[in-house]
Image 1: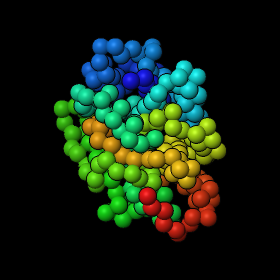
Image 2: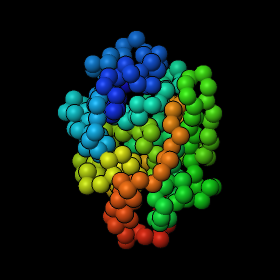
Image 3: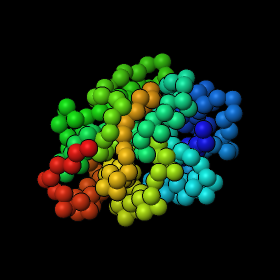
Length: 233
């Protein structure tokens, strides 16, 4: 399988990140940091900008799958490549958590714009690979409208040139994932969630900062024609 990881981090080197160890343990003997990872260290740029740059580089090199993953993730499965290929062929874009149906409204959080029975996916959280707890959101695999950006895979042979991460989003590290997956759905790109065990070393959103609030307002303005309406797949 022809793939690249795209990882943005505030840390200086990939070796300092949580994901580093699992990359070597789980991707196989042919894995190469220099060839298979686009690492953006000391990053202060919006993720939408970095991810679009990664998409462009992958397309120029005829990469089949772009894997966008946070640096505080541990890939916790021995058949990682097999699973990526499976779900990457099942869906044009897929993640690990999302929802089948959303109502565009405040707060713009993927799990709160949907009823509990429409949530999909599963993600583990914990401090390291030896201590973690699973959160099961719902059925996997399944088609969804929105996916969480902790882990996203794009089948580059299926992504239209017109669909990119929205660089006008004023929130540097929020909403890039929700807008990308929603734009995919609105452009008939098949979005889903798959079963790839990871451990996310993060408590999630802890405060609604001014940056987050600006991003939320941008999201609501961008999709205002869908405000208080329900979108379902």
